[in-house]
Length: 116
Image (cartoon, rainbow, N blue to C red; front, top):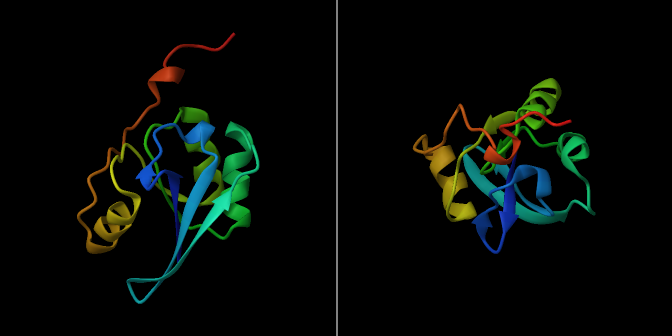
């Protein structure tokens, strides 16, 4: 299993669509076996789900995320844990232990209105 965290300065980055870096965690037998930091090379909202899929990610932890990005992730089969803040490594540890504090109804307030 591979978990990606929208990442900035050791913390969970709070705007998925502007994520420049993901920290990737390779998980075996419920434990972190290795990590890597992957630069998105400027991929925007639409390309990030594809970037994660191509990176063999199964699960994403992030802060705010818009509905379009949530749909794109769902289409790729990536499980989403949004509305998370704080230390990225701790968020992964909490997910693995079943104690991650996340919001299944997370929305990005930036995207609450209609785009014209």
